[in-house]
Structure formats: structure tokens, C-alpha cells
Length: 189
Image 1 (spheres, rainbow, N blue to C red):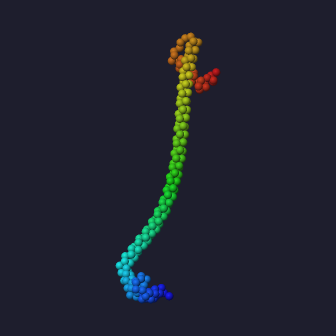
Image 2 (cartoon, one colour; image 1 turned 30 degrees about the vertical axis):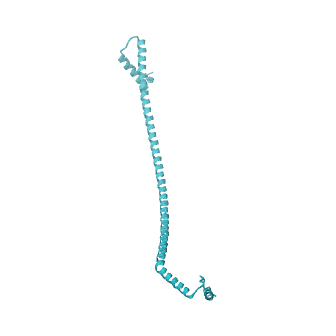
Image 3 (cartoon, rainbow, N blue to C red; image 1 turned 135 degrees about the vertical axis):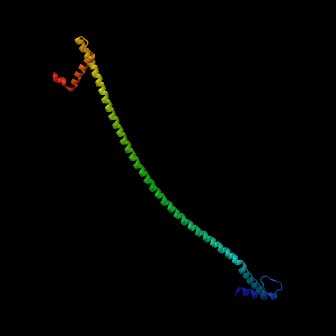
């Protein structure tokens, strides 16, 4: 049996028997007005309270959905930017390797140029030293010849015991030494 009908029946039976009011005693007119007030309250709430509440809930749901959409877009954008950064980093690494390679090639070229320049300078220094040695040798030989002429003239003048004209003596001895250099002395012996 239904609870409301059981309560109504029980209330009708006990209501006649008792004269004191009871909360659980349901009278037909009280129930009617309770239903009417409930429906009236439901109508007022549906007309004035539910639209703002539902509007607020819909607005909140829209804000949450917009925030989720924005987060998804931001995540996609950040993924795209991360990929761009990754590509830029790879490009920068390639560029850096290219620059390092070029620098190594340039350094090797400079090293070869410096070695070649050092070799050329070394060859120039050696050649200059050879020329200076040869010139010094010639000067030393000339000085030795002059000393030899002086010694020979001194020895000859002692042998002859007379003093010859020194200019004439030098010329004779120089001619003699020149003939020695040419190898004519060996032919005259």
C-alpha cells in the first residue's frame, strides 16, 4: 500500500478520535494547500531563480570549456614552438660545425702559409749568409794576398839588399800572384 494513502487513512481515523493537533495528521485541505504552495513555489523558482542559476552554471561551464580549449591551444603552440626551437638548435649546430670546419681549414691554410714563409725566409737567410761568407772569404783572401805581397817584398828586399820602388814592387808581386791564381806558374817551371 502506498505510504501517503496509509498516512491519510490513519490520520482520518485518528483525527476523529483525537482532538489535539498532530503534525503527522494529514487533513485533505492541508495537503491540498501544501501541493498548491509547492507548485506555486516551483513556478516562481522556475521563472525567476532557475534561469540565473542555470545561466551561471552554463557560463561557468563555458568558461571552463574556454579554459580547456585555451590550454589545448597553448599546449599545441608550445609543442610547435618546442619543435621550432629543436629545428633551430639543429640548424645552429650544423652552422656551428660548418663554422668550425671553415675555421680549421683557414687555420691549416694559415699554418701552411706561415711554414712556407718561414722556409722562404730561412732560404733567404741561408743565401744571404752564404753570400756574406763568400764576400768575407774574398776579403780574407785579399788581405792574405796583401800580407803575402808585403812579406814577399820584405823578403825580396832583404835578399837583394836594396829597396825597390814599393809601387813597382807591389805591381810585380801582384802580377806574380795573379799568374799563380791562373796556374801560369806551374807552366813556367
